[in-house]
Amino acid sequence: MSEPIAQPTSTRPIDDAPWERYKRPYVRDLAYALACPNVLTQWIDFAPQENTHAISVHSARFWQVQFEAYKQRLTELDTTTDYQELTRYLLKRPSPNRLGFHFEGLLSFWLEDGFARKLHPYETLASNVQLYNGKQTTGELDLILYNHGENLVEHWELAIKFFMGSAPFAPENWV
Image (cartoon, rainbow, N blue to C red; front, side, top):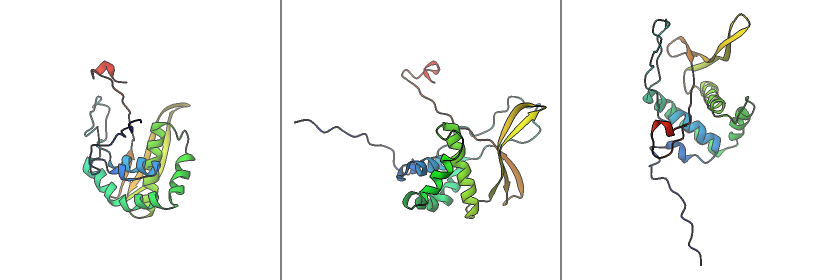
């Protein structure tokens, strides 16, 4: 008689990882995008002489507030056919299986869906705006938003990184 295989269980309380309560993968991903802890807590300016505008990073508290405001909608997406709306939105985007594009799609969905439902004040004016110098592409702006709460136009850059490490966890062992 064989022994049952032990299933791994999370030792973290669900409050530490609130995205784990959602069953559908894209809803879990969206909850993670809103509730995950920030790695970057302030902008480190390596070229201050070139910067003419203030650059800020949203605080962990900002994202907690956004997650709480969107929690009921996440439950709807997780338990109703509204999940199809999220799925279609993500799969119609370019390269939906690449991590950065998926993350951008999740936040774009939240911005559009949440604004339409009056769950936050951020209206998307433009996304993925190519910057040129003559005919040469020099960069891209991820999101241009209008913050109706502050009456400001804001430029948001998105970034998500995935790191893998192996023991011993010295810098050269991280990818």
